[in-house]
Image: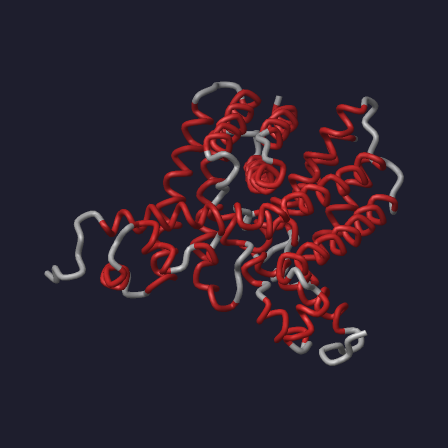
Length: 189
Length: 189
């Protein structure tokens, strides 16, 4: 095992730093130099742990992030019983999430999606899988009778979450999440 | 009048190029070098026309863009009479807009919002004004009886538009706009 550039835990720290930077500024904010500076890891260790460089690091960070957000969504929905209450609880959870980050962090998937281009087309599948997994989690817990209607409503919820992140960053307010939660709850009441 | 770095029309071309780059990749994609390369304008002319550099250029481009999108939203809503039809027409217009751009461009305001940081805090007001103007346009044309309800619904529409842009970029599909349009139309039917 190579030991020279290896610092215990540095791989995890690099992934955590990348998630944080992606949530803040998308792919442009998560340059190798930024990750090295923010994580405190030696520069050489980035390529030691992630031979594919920035794209590999971003891809693994997004997969890790997507799994956590799926759990976050699942727990918020599971905290209530009635569909309308589940939806309000979900948007309330996101409202608190943006408040806790002082409106300086949003969804890593949303932020990277608006950076997509031919050079990072390889990340699009990771982003699509993340959105798909989150929508499946919503559909699994908010059943609207028919599969098509359930899937379409989960899509609307996902759309509203990503859009509320945009408005919250600009307006420095969590109200867009709560506002969307109230409206969408009426659709399933 | 200084003539050396001045090329007729280059100021307008730089603004148009900046709008296009902001819609594609947010602020990170609209560097001075990118703008010079894409617009074909001489590098010196950027600072001739925009002494404040990139932030001045981005700010003016966003104001110009915001005005056009307000007209776009206004025309789409005005094309129908009933509130539910207006909403579907609005989302249909955005669906066609992302299709025409082959899912490679989104909302400049959304893309820049997810780049916000202390260094570009000066742009936040421009973004907030843009969202505000668009929501006012929606509220002016989709009256839900009370001022509060009308304002809140316009907010939800705005949230859905910004979120649908995220999903459309990732999914390479315009369905998120049409899906949102169908659901939101039921809220005002």
